Structure formats: structure tokens, C-alpha cells
Image (cartoon, rainbow, N blue to C red; front, side, top):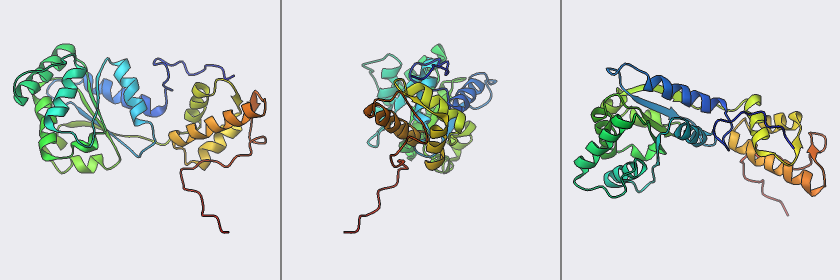
Length: 248
């Protein structure tokens, strides 16, 4: 079994460097002078742990977390935010919803964390974020999405110039991979050399590293082992690429 070396503040979340990067950006934005804009854009490729970082920030800063879906509308977005802020049955117009969101954000100082924010890249939805930002003076809004989110937001000057921090999610490093090992491999000791190989073969994508760590633990347990290293591992490394077509 792995020793717990991660010193997690949030159970189930490894404190990877992307977690630290998003937390630092949120703290800096929450502590800014009020005359400065208050939006953070956290962008990056799929599988880098952006949602994990958002989960950590949600707990650490008592934030309001909303994951946007492809079918989002202005009403569903505002309703989801209000529900996260404790208003289960909002009443009035959409303008009333916006004012209520702003009132609660200002009163509680909670950061508003919006995941899958790529789906907000439409004029009507971008304007909702702008309205919330302008009404909730001093509050912090975090938009999290894929790598091209920064390009999408650049199409609207009014939202683009309200972004204080652009934070790009990074690939993992060996320290991150070892933290993931310590967090997830509780029944088997997975050696550092095998963890490092997983990192190299997967291009240091955290999600793929986790898939291989689970496979290593499964293989060790199937053979009655309590530890496994590079020499003992016989499975093909999962890289995310589809398998090659077999020739009959």
C-alpha cells in the first residue's frame, strides 16, 4: 500500500500543479483592488485535470460551482447558478435572476466557478457573464474550458477586457504522477520507475496516467502481488490512441 504523502486539503483530489495554479489565480483575483476586472480564464487540453482543479477550488474557497451543458440557455444558466447559491425556486424576470446572483456573490464573497465554459461562447450567454460581473462588483468569476476557450472569448471585446488572469493548464510532471499514484493506488505499491514510464508513454496527461495506474494495480492483484515495478509490468500502456487494426 502507498503511504499518504499528498497532504490533501480536499479528500480525493491530488494537489497537482494545475490545482495550485488555479488556486493561486483565484486567490490573486479575490484579493485584487475593486477597480480591476474579476474574471479568470483557465484553459487547456482535455485530460489535464481542469475539472479536478475546479473541484478543489470549489471546496477550498466555498465557491459556487456550475458545469455548463451544450443545451444551456440564459435561463438555465442563471437558474443553475442560483441553485448553487441556495436559491432553489427563483422568481421574476431574467434580469431579476441576474441581480439576485450578483447580490449573493457580493454578500458571500464566493467565487463563481463555471466549468465547460466553451458552451457560453454565444453572444447571449457571454452577455449574461458580463452582466453578472458588472453587477457583482468585487466578485470573482472563473471560466474553465478547453484550449480554444481563450480564442472564443477574444471575439467579444467586452468580456475579453474583463479578464484579469489567463491561466493555461499544464501537462503533468513526475511529481504530479507520483501524487496521483499515492492518491489512487492504495492496495499495491507501484514503483517510481513504472509511474515514470506511464508518464512518458502517455505524454504526461494526468487522466491517461490514472488509467495506467489502475491497470498496474489490477495486474499486481491478479498475480497476488503487493508491489509492481517496470520489470514486472507486462501490459500494453494505454496512450489514448485506438488499437491498430489486426491483419488476418
